[in-house]
Amino acid sequence: MRGSTEILEPSVMNNVDNHRSAHEAFNRRDWAALAQHFASDAQYTDHARGVVLKGSQDFVDYLRANWVIAFSDVAVTEVGYLDAGSHVIAHFTETGINDGEFGPMPRTGRRISVPICEVMQFNEEGRIIRGSVYYDQVTILVQLGHMEVPPGNWTDMDLTSSITNLQK
Image 1 (tube, rainbow, N blue to C red):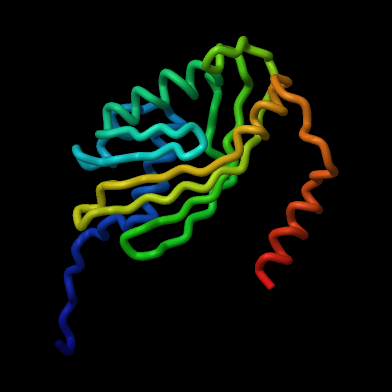
Image 2 (spheres, helix red, strand yellow):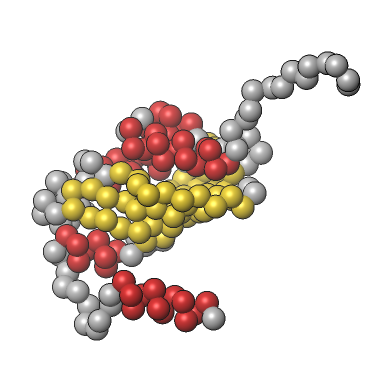
C-alpha cells in the first residue's frame, strides 16, 4: 500500500545462523543452549570414530566425555558455512591443547589444529535432526605424538594438488 508503513516480524534465524549458534554454544560450554539446537530424536554420526549418537543429551555427553575432557580449551575456529536449504555444511578448524586423557592415551600437552567438515540437516522448526562429522584421526594422533607421520611426502601442497587434480 502506498503511504503505509509495513510492520515486519522479527527475523527468524535461518539454518546457517542455527548452526553457527550451536558452535558458539559449544565454544562457551553452554550445554543447555547447545542441546536446544537439536530435535529430541536427532541422530549425529562421528564417522572418524564410527560412533552414532541419538538425541541431544547423548551428543552433549559425548562432546563433554571425549573432546572437552581431552582438550579443555577445545574450540571451533575459522568457520565457513555453506547454506544448502535444509542442510548446512560447515568447514572449520578445531583447536585445543591436550591436557587430559584422549581415550586410552595419556595427555601430551600438545596442541591440535584439525580441519573438520560437519553436515547438519534441519527440520522446519530449525532444529538439527541429523548430523555428520568428518575429520582425519591420523592428523590428531600425529600432532599429539601418539603416531609417527605415515611414510611418504604428505605436505599441504601435495594434498592440495591431489584434491585439485581430482576436481579436473
